[in-house]
Image 1 (cartoon, each protein chain N blue to C red):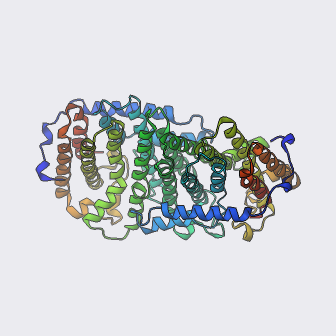
Image 2 (image 1 turned 30 degrees about the vertical axis):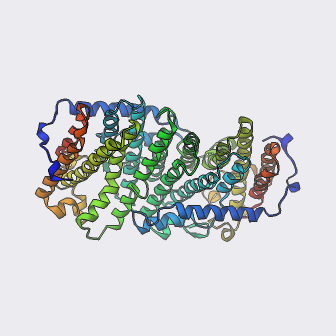
Image 3 (image 1 turned 135 degrees about the vertical axis):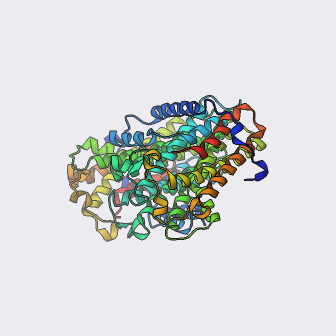
Length: 309
Length: 309
């Protein structure tokens, strides 16, 4: 994040962004519906739970980042971005299923619907999560993702790092350990960087890998993703504070009720809003080297800090 | 399984087998201790739970199959088999951690020690399992596993298929669905083939992939693994019936108590023993094309039906 990089977001193209986001979501959902084993050898219930988890309502923001990042580069293979986007959504969906379990956050509601362990049962939720996690790597390993196996291995290594014990799973563990602790701003940033930022960063990194980006292009996308991820998380904390449960689609105010430190509790609501805007501007500034094809990514930065759900 | 293939197991070399198994276990444990993130970014508790799960007492039978299968082929890379064996053990260990959870089998004891959710807590057990599962693919994707990324992608695809919704996770789901049902012999075979057989088969398949086995060699190893996996599962049911909990290291008689159909409940104890022996002989017969380097695999077949724990 750098003030010098801050630009005015309202100069950016907005027309058609939401349509573009919806089209991407439909494309990725279609790919997921095809990729998921149906009927699975493990029986219909496991299968239904996996589909329920991964095809539920959602913005598909992470898949969108893969598609838009890969779209910057002519070298990206035609089917690869959609498949990688689907794999990333499998990881995101599994993490929500396990995170909602009674022994974790114990949530009954997710994206406005009963969570998987409420709609099915706890054991099925554990297994559906495991199945989706495994599925992500099966999708990436297949030749349809990219004809070059070295590219596929880079994607797999990057996704495993972003989602494992030194990434998202590590962030969840830090979150558990933080209960009853008072975290400072740097600690919250680290926690959120692992828990949420790592997968968002993977979305852009995957686009760069598929697109055979040069090191400067890859670094610019990584900078964008880092700022975007933090802006996203601050906006999430703001929504958790001021949002309406019906609109957000999950219980709000939970962090405050649990006494957890958040960006809002540390910075205050006004400063958190300013910070999120600054980060979004800084994210956009990283994209200066790219032409109009980066407009989707530019709009995302605006979207994440303005969204109401 | 074929009677024509049956040979006398007691003619096989036995000397040194248990030492060889122990040496393999030490080698793989050493690799795992190196490969696991320490300290993990997610904090020490997650890390300890992952190490506790993966380095607990155990025979390391699946890793042994990788090492011995790869050992048949001069073309296998030097470090690859140990890394693949470690990845396979990560998957096996994660599956035990999740399987032991209160919402699944609700076991307090595993390999003679408290299960992960008893030694730590449920949330940490879920995350440690997720971390180990993810770790397996990170290990396989790295260039140290095999210089050829096409080989690494084949290993990743095979492991994902063996352990996902159409493999081990599918078997667990079938097991859940079977509660209160009466399965026949074919259904139990299918269930066990997914739940246990798939990972055992991957062990041998991985050796064939790393060793650049020709199709006949790969088919022989696949046949061996199929018979071995079934023999292993029948022996497990026998141990569950007649075994001593202290020696087996986990609660015994659970399946019978739960009214679950097992090979023993359907075949009877005597016939189950005969069947396991026949399968072990048949497994060994698949190895006829290999020289003395397959003696470790031959001994495993004998070991799994004679083991008391």
